[in-house]
Image 1 (cartoon, one colour):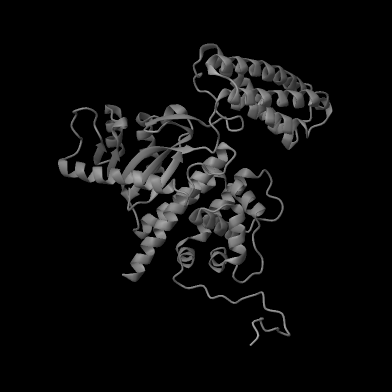
Image 2 (tube, one colour):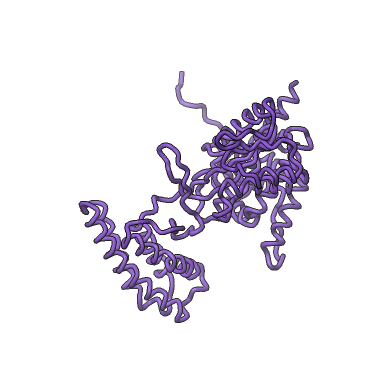
Length: 447
């Protein structure tokens, strides 16, 4: 008996006819989503982003399916491309079952950039309204909290920031011509010197005084090269290219960061509102006071949990609005923007307790204001409603923990700009809501 496989006269088929089960989650999701409304949102986003609507229109239905796929699976662009090419339920979700075409990762990336954070937020708001219409969630119940979206960046010490700046400058100047040709050698030599000083600081410096001495030397080296770079940009260097624009942006950021670094070396204290990343100057340090993690570096978000477990999220762009006192009002305003009506029950932690916030909530139309009081003050609601609000408030942390898991990727996304971080945050929340809608619809179908 031969152990070798039988040879065939004809080559094996590479195409297969696959029947997607009607109960698959992607099939259910395809029937639940109003794709016409999502297309309208995408068209509106394109009109805002593009100066002239020339060229071929994007394949809205297919690309929106790719966005939904990335949200619910928490996958990156290349994984989404592979799933759409070889996974039948993903092709069904993207309306590509009757086509041999696919979607490459570059096209998907450009489409998500075109949508932007506003487009992703609008899609999620539509899903929430659709869920409320179907009876899957109860918008009359609102529990709010804040959370931090951590950025994928190293710890922002002064030596690391200066070394990162020199690395970016060395890379971008190497791709530019004209007046930058005269400083390329100096930039390369300076970047090598900064890397050597950084290595000495990490490995050989003993004690704080030696580290401070190396840090001051690095500061003067970076400051001198930064002045030459600014001079080259001012003399009319080729900064219209992508590399030139990147160089101009990091140089403007370094103008603000250098005084903050000098302040640290002179006083030993971190400057207020310190920039913690060269290419993402909008991210900042968020003091959380948690055990084992006192400070988180990233952006602050507001999270609204509706009755039934669905979540709405929005970025707190202004630092002064990131406090619980200010966020308490913002959460009610954002809820009313989505559903056009205030909630009947509103819960928040004691950080938002103030007479102004309670009065604002009551004037907005909230019947039961469950802002936890500070100290020994009495609640604004009865004992039974207080216990209900406490139970609902406890579930907010569970929802935040879920969207922060690796399944959705809310925290530490693979993003290299503040806008991309915001877009990834909205996509994670969208995936959480879509998954919950599928589960509820499947349970209703089997009951």
